[in-house]
Length: 413
Image 1 (spheres, rainbow, N blue to C red):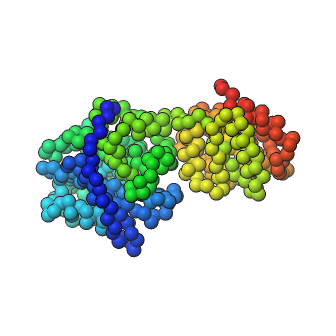
Image 2 (cartoon, rainbow, N blue to C red; image 1 turned 30 degrees about the vertical axis):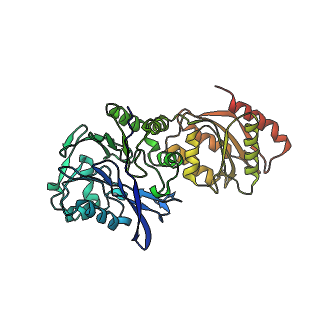
Image 3 (cartoon, rainbow, N blue to C red; image 1 turned 120 degrees about the vertical axis):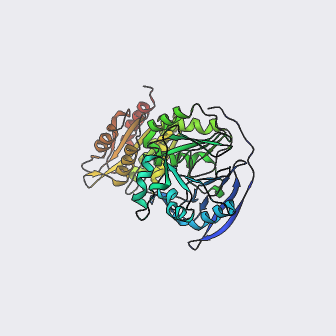
């Protein structure tokens, strides 16, 4: 995709009382004809009720002001009033012609019914699969005469601009589509290129985009690559996702990471040492092993699976080229925190890495065997043959086998 960098107008943050909390929305022009009308949710704690949001999240919607007016998506029910107020401000007494629905997940679709009832002349534009889902969320309304089903490559003229719809099934629901606006060379990318964190927080894109991608979209790398092939013919200046900031420059930078993530290629040569420990002995062994790797010139990240965020641990596993797992036997099985981590890797399609195993057990260790079995179910994960077994705590006699494991892990295949 060729990259061009437009000048984007500044924006102001406005406080708004919603659900007894302070939210923010952005009065922001993305291009001359497209305005952001989403909101920051700065007090929400969990995304999808499982992923921590220390810096909130944004729900994104856009207003396209042309001869015909189009609105892209709604926002989460937590901030409904903010969205309707901004929409009314942009309409200035006019009526919207189209509501473009890219994704039916409730953080984007929650206000569809209220909007359709409020603006009776507005048509809903979406894929046939999205339209079929509407009664699942809104059973009290007949959408039949108010919907326009679009297929891959269909277009809709707003006057000066033409919208082209690009189906993007399983990124990360089956009904998803993207929309390209020709006059602005702008792509509404649905959940692709999104990130955790409120826009007002203003952090670096990469870390929270990685955590978002791996945990939300990560399973569907082949579908992301399929969408990329469809997008090759478009010149894209701006990417406007459903979460996080609109990307308005250096588009190739963002695409390069999505190419890595969706092809399961590590971002970085190095090792994640992930450990779960009951009384600290397994942790001490894992951290000693991490130092052995560093002494050999390896780049190492460590994560305590009992204390650190699971979604970040999974993201770091995808980031690095190698993985070490260290855990004790527990109830004649695998310590739960490690089992949960490996389960998350498996369901997110973790693959193409090299791994090593350290286990701990006081009388009948089986953790190593169980970790190896779970790793064996992951595509192209090469696990070092040797398992280091610690008996209750790390002893001097264990160090030679750990040194040998470090050498084997770093050995080029």
